[in-house]
Image (cartoon, rainbow, N blue to C red; front, top):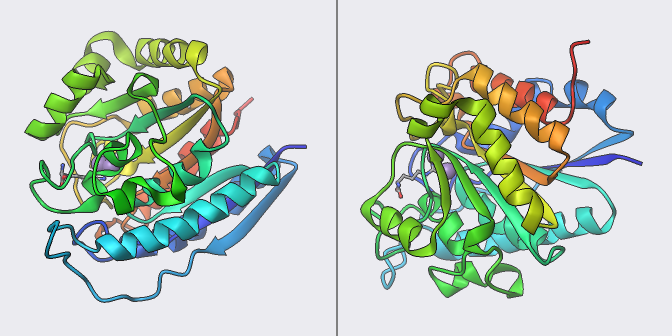
Length: 298
Ligand SMILES: NC(=[NH2+])NCCC[C@H](N)C(=O)O
Ligand SMILES: [Mn+2]
Ligand SMILES: [Mn+2]
């Protein structure tokens, strides 16, 4: 029996633009249940993790914004994701800013020996407190999952690291900080920047990414940051970068992932309805979920 569990993570503590906490509501309003209910035997929306309205906190030692709060809330998400997988359901997490991936991956990775990760994003999110230009934790979750960064973050779920560098594929990168570039080179992380997508096309990029992960992994998590798409197609994001992946290319990518049957968990993050144009970005997110989960026209 194919079961889907939806978890809302309305956390906006990983960056400074308010509104991304309303992402899960916007995505639900865009019709996630109606769209996905025919693609599974059962769709269960477990509601939102309780984030509340905590006051912004700057850790004086590390300079990290909301470090303790994010660590605490990530533990809650990790537990929820863990339970969903235990119960035999596919976990689909709705963000929230990308710092939520810290908790999602903590809940997912313990179920696999070699978890693969597809990081669909304009950014690398590979900063640490030392390399971050902003102190925003949403620019750090992939580094955290590699075991790099503040121990309160890397140890969410009680273990580290969550993923190995050779099991990661970044798709859509076009804005990387200096420390992120150095880390990508040092660890040999596979990255398809916009250059490769333009040059060889999304079909080839996805074929390569899928065969790269298929051999070595026993599960693959899709972490899809809506800012991986072009801001014309997904305007409701906090850190837009021009020249991104199109709506059509993204559908193709999701359809190829559906065919490959490698994806075992997913999250859609950074939908900010305050910055959006009539809920367009949430609508795009839901449409892409349809393709990811095997929707077909004919
Ligand atoms: N998940 C995101 N949208 N991340 C954007 C990160 C931007 C920048 N690299 C930073 O570290 O602050
Ligand atoms: Mn991101
Ligand atoms: Mn991003």
